[in-house]
Image (cartoon, rainbow, N blue to C red; front, side, top):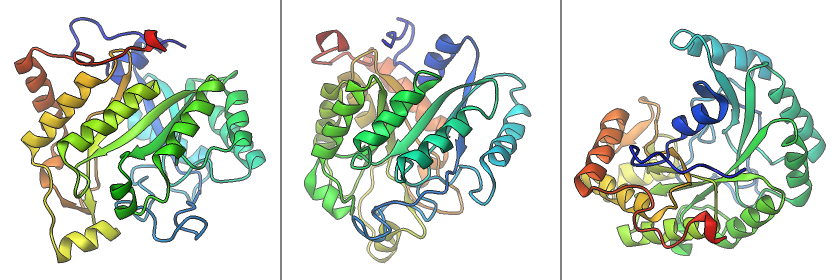
Length: 317
């Protein structure tokens, strides 16, 4: 399905606007925990996980995996309805690697999740680029005939030195291969990118976004590196602090990245949340709306918008 470009009054193509346009009302992600692990934790690819990943597999705001999917969904929904009584819902499997299981098990899990509520309109599956074999792609393709399916791939960076330092245990080629096969199956792909990884310069971060832009993904998630308690990176930082991006530097990089992304790419995130009790640094990321407002202000100051310096659009594919 072809994405629409943002209206001229908008500086970037925000997910909230895209979902409201697509489904006719405000649409929310409901994060569930499917009980997965990761090949970078169980020894298949590595141990300890990615250096920045928390003990909950970066699913710190997902449901409680000790509960059934039904109970998780109902608990999350009851919280949302206090503020938004009505809406549509996208089930989001975020924690750990949500394609790391037998295809028949995944098929049952995804179908169960998609059927939890009549107002569920889609399924988002977060995973590693090296964990989408052909049989899993086939399961996702089959499900896409019943609901909208999006696959979120954790790229983070294209630079091998950083990939090794962060113990990612996958390569840029894995991302490229996964995107190609998912696109062949007609599935939407979102790339997850982390800015401010140790040792990376703004130029390196822009190189990652150029690569993502060329890949033709439907959406992008951007956020600043969170240094968290209980992670390998957190232990390193507490013993020997390394430089982190300041808020102005982060805002500048994100605006540069937005200018390089095609205008029809949906921006799923421009900053991220971290549990307050786990966040070590940078502390400015606690004020999510301040970060978003500073990005908006910088785009207005530049009189710029998403795609302003993009070398290609999806029409070129």
